[in-house]
Length: 288
Image (cartoon, rainbow, N blue to C red; front, side, top):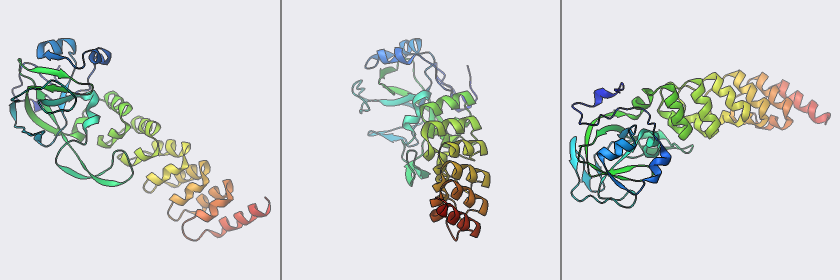
């Protein structure tokens, strides 16, 4: 029952929350959206719902959180993401809340190519007192009271999941691969297959096999890689000759490969084209 993260739960209350990927009947959950349940009823119905809070700031919707027990004065079990309660989610939906929080760092935009300022949350483990009330929303729950325990970083949370649990997270949102320190080839390839080229910038330590997979499907994947090896460059320009424009001063071999497959690639070579590439382009133009 206890996961490797139970150390973040000093003196937990009756329902111990461990950090692991949740497994419960989502269809059954959706049938109860909009209902209010007691803690006992909720966890009898959804025994594997793993509570987490994805906020690093302890102030939200006019309430200042504190470590330990928190109680809302006027619980309002209605609406969606409205004041009148404390919001929690479970591990399967955590990726929806990764940009919540007050503190921030410079970080690659989860859904784009630009480096922007976004909020990076810590993940706070929580437990509920026995008399807590729970209001069900589609992607989160609202409670009238909770206990905040110690927090862990987003990266540490994802690193401590099993690879199968990490894979499930990536299937739900490929961009969470950013928070996995050393993703396997399988995880990297899955993320690229689901989200295409932009996710490459979110991958820590892009592997050779994942890079080959990416350029084999689209040579322009080179635009998202840092210093790809020559073999990767060759594979890319063979698939998409004009992707040579993404290579800083390509070698002779890569230039010839690109021009061989599309003579117009000669115009996209950064720097002065190699004489061999120029001669090949002239030959191809003449024989057209």
